[in-house]
Length: 456
RNA sequence: GUGGUUGUAGCUCAGUUGGUUAGAGCGCUAGAUUGUGGUUCUAGAGGUCGCCGGUUCGACCCCGGUCAGCCACCCCA
Image (cartoon, rainbow, N blue to C red; front, side, top):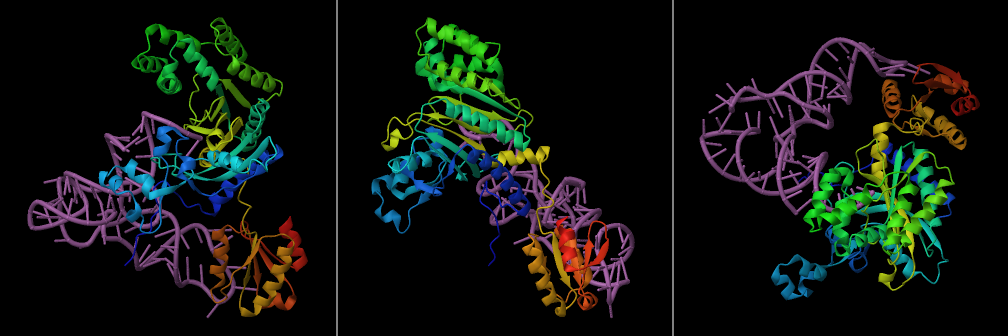
């Protein structure tokens, strides 16, 4: 009986070319992280559900992949829960582990577990896959890779400033035109308080976040549907419609907050960030203080980041923010953290669309040795040792019985630029015939000459 | 999780109101070419029409279900 080979929904294989390209993105990001002093961390694919649940909002909890207990787990499960056929009641009985949903929560767990061994502020980066039971779409997968960096143990806005510098560096190196949208949850809270509708904080955020998708009119309708009065909505719209530079809008907002005794903390934080980065001259990254940015994981409490590529309709390519109490849930209060996360596959998709900043054609095997018959193999092995010792990627075509035409064809199909032919003539003369596939030119060379030629 | 849409050869796609042996291009294999690939020519292989069930004398085609891709919503990298 044959099973039909298939992949689970929302997962993919990566062939050689894709892996090389993905590694390029990964190396670019990791290189930036390391230059900023972040050190690596890896955590398990699975975490206890007690670690994961409740961190991502009700939506997020539904997207968690749960792992069934081993063994005859139904026998020990609570009978009444099972009899109700209520998944929510049964799940805790039959599953205690889940696949991680992001890298930030496992990081927070790690920080708390290792708090006595970590020197604060603690900075780490982490590049690993995460899983979400979401419905797949373009640029949206059930298994995807995140490239995170986080700093915990400092309230300083310099952390935010550093992440903006990292954004600048990474997108410049990748050649992606990027726009960083930045806001602060505290400012959003202030806005909700200003219109005296703080009890609607979360739905207000989801509504105004849709600004660029459904427009001002659509947002207005959503807000009214929440039960806000026309005056409240109008007041909110005035804030969202503020014009001018980042600083001008921030100052205007500060005035309004001050006149109504609203906590200015968020404003101050944003002001600090914006003034630092204005001195850094980050020309190739557009930074936009955007009051309509209201998304992000539910644990964010301060700064929130989102990066979009304006030339590509693929959603956000990076997100992040500050979380004041993520470690508090695990028993370590008063440790503020801030982090960002790049979505590897979305960056990949963008670069596939617009082209890559480097040429990957020279990354594979550079020369393949083609002995005519078995007598050529010892000579080929000897040559290969020397060629490889010189740092050249080289391989041997192992089957001598096939015709030379097929051997050369192998080189051609693999995209190997050079074929080194070893026949009885060459062996007798102590030479190698080196054929350049692209031109068809070939020349008889000594081994030293061949190495020199391949290094050119 | 909700709605829509697509699913035919390795790939991109045709397929007559349901009627006998389901086609094309590219790719693949072999030969022309027993020390040489890419061009050309010749021949060939490859499909339980996503899967399961139903209607029918008969289903790639109609109906139901299911799986997967894509799109919109929700949310997000």
